[in-house]
Length: 258
Length: 307
Image (cartoon, rainbow over all chains, first blue to last red; front, side, top):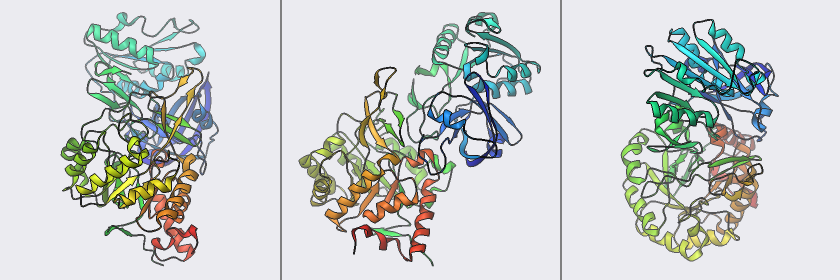
C-alpha cells in the first residue's frame, strides 16, 4: 500500500459519461493485482469539499502509469474532470486483499457491466498474458456507454474472445451480457464479474444453481478505503466484511446481502 | 531551537500531543502499511465492548458538505477477542494506546475495564458516553447527569488507570457535563464526539443511512468543537486535561483546539481522506512553536483565554 502524489498524465472524456484519467504512480503500477483499486483525492489542496477520496479500479497499467475509467455521476467524479495534465493529486493504493484468483487450466468467463468493465480489465489482460482460455461478455446501455470498447477490441486480438452487448442493440448482441451464459459456461469454468448490483445478484443465483465458482467485484461508498472506517461493509456468511479490505472481490457464495 | 513536543498527563509521558481518534484508525494495524504509527503521541483504539457487536446495517456512511455522517454502530470484536488476536501486535508499536470503552450497561463498562486493567500498553481509558449511533448505552449515559456520574464513579473503583470521559456535543450546557465528570472522579475529558445529524436522499425520498440518523464529523464541525473545548477550559482550567477532538485536518485546526485549552488533540475523520494528516499536523505544530518562540508545547495550551 502506497500513499503518494501522482501526476496527471492525461484526463479525457471517452464517451457517454465516462472519462479516463492516466496517472503516474510507479509503485502502484508495478504492484497492483487484478481486482485491486485506489483511493483518489478529488479536492484541491486546502479545500475540503468533496471531502473523501473516491475508490476506482485500476483498469490498466503501462510502465509507471495507471489508467482509471470513471463515470461522472456525482460531486467527486465531476471535480475529478477538472484536473489537467501536469496537475498532481494524492492517491492511496493498491487496495483490497480480496483479488481475482487466476486458474491457468480453467475456462474463464468474465462479465463486465457498464463501468464495471474497468474492474475486470486488468484481470483480462493478465489472463491474456498467461494464455488462459477467456471469454469476455461486456454489456452496456447502448453503444455510447460501451466506453472501454476499444480497449476490449485490442485485447481480443491477443486470443481473448470478446462479445459485446447493448440493451438497445445499438452495438453487438441485443440484451444483457448474461443472457447467453449457458452458451459459454461449462461445469469447470470460473466466472468473474463486475457491474451493477442486479447483474451481480443474477450471477450469484445463476452460479449457485449450477455450482460454478464465481467471483464478484463490489463497488461501495467508502470513506477511507484502507479498512478503518467500517463504512463499506457487506453481509457475508461470516458476518460483515469490509469491501475495501476483505474485498472488493468476494466469492459469490460467501455473500448474503450486497 | 529544539522544540519539546512531549506532554506529560497523569504522570504518563506522551511523545507528542497528536493522537488519533477512536473509530477512525481501527486498532492501529492497518496504518502500519502506510507509515510508522509509533510517531503518534497515542492511538485511541476503536471502541471495545464486552461482547462482540455486529454494528448497524449498511448504508452506514454518507458524505455531506465538508464532512460526513457515519452510523457504524460500534462494530467490534469484543474485548476478549481483541486481547487474544489483536493486542499481541500492538505490543511491538512504540507508542501509548488508550482503550475506548463502550457498553450497554454499567456492568459492561466495568467488565471491559477490568479485562484491560493488566494490559501494559493500554495506559488509559476513554469512556464513550457519546456515541449517537446505538440504541442502548452510549449517549444515554452522556446525556443524563445522574447516570453519567454513577458510571464514572463505578469505573473509577475498578481501575488504577486514568479515566477520560468522551463527551457528547449533543447537550445544552457542556460546562455542566464537564464539571459532573470531574466531580465524579474523571481524570480528564475528551470532546467532542460526532454531532447527531441526518441526510435525506431526495430521489428515494428517505434518509440515506440505515438507522436514519448519523454522527456528523469532518472539517464542518471544527468551530463547534473549538467552542466546546474553550467552554470546557473556562469551567475546568487545568484541573484535569482536556483532549480536543472535532474537525481537525491541519496544524492550524489543531492549534485552535490547543489554544482553546486542549492538552492534546485527536485527529479523526482526516485519517480517512488524508492518512498522513497526523504527521503533517505534528510537523506544523512544531514549526508554529518555533516561529512564535515557545520552547515547549504546553506553553500554549489555553493561551486563547488570555494571561
